[in-house]
Image (tube, rainbow, N blue to C red; front, side):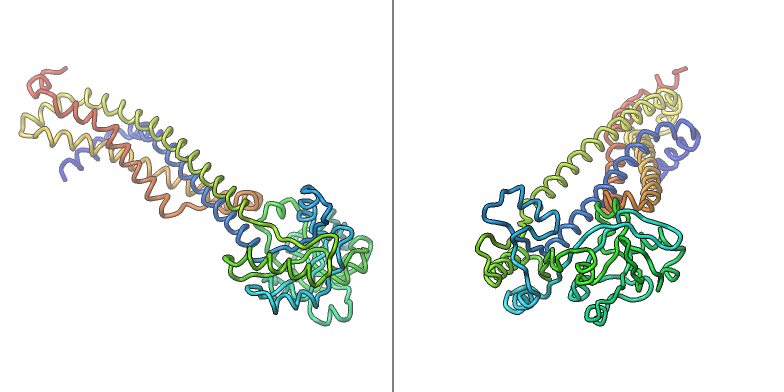
Length: 413
């Protein structure tokens, strides 16, 4: 206990020097913790993105004569290529009944247009038409008003739901948006609801002007689109995602009678492998950064501790003359070194936590990298390596101090 008092007293007696000594550790731990927090956010975002894709499996059509580029374009565009069979919803309902692992489906069609209220205008808004089954599969958080209902589909109502990004740009509040007439692509629609887009965390959403949802039949009628452009089947169990998706595509090919092509699903196996490789690369990069910064900080601690031993030579000699053993002196300086790095590591963690808290408010960052977070594991790792650096780089000065001859030390000027 006495050694802890001596160590703490020495640190408090030289506050500025102690702070400057800790600065390397503070910066090192803060940078490592911050990068780890970004890495955690990225991993969660990627895992969530892959999970969504595994739950809602897109079924798309490819021609027998089409190339890989054509297939990739069909998948990315979310549009049925020319020559594709006109899919009927009755076929999809049959697939839900007959294919194991599939609990539902929904279809969409998509285009873009300018949207204007009485005061403001937003360019290139994404317009998405959805089937009624969409609302059974996808969970939309309604912020004001209501979602599209069965009567809107049967009566071809000129209603739309807008996401909160678009609502913020066009109106002063979500409630103000309700029942307002907006002009979309030169056509008038009434806003019946404001919702939180389920894809807000996606990178593509951060670049979008906003989204508006319609019945797919209304969007097709008003903007000259096919009622069915993209097809998704919902698989609750991700372990069955690949097999169930393939079975659905095979069944749809059979039901459609397609002869010049077939329906397919995207195999996420390669994407998952790439994701794991990215995470491994990030972890290695973080490890190298952490090792470098902490080693530099540790060298700084060792240098200052060696200076401290020289300055306190007479104090060491006096303590030894009064009965302090070599192990007492060794522990005193080792504890002082560990305290310096531990306090520095704690300050670094708090600094990283503050930066992460500020960045967590940035919607652009959240969309690109996910929500950064400092996990309990990150805290333990940071503090463990702070202590380890204190021990490794403090042992040399502590050993030097413990070996001093008390008589020679007392004579030191």
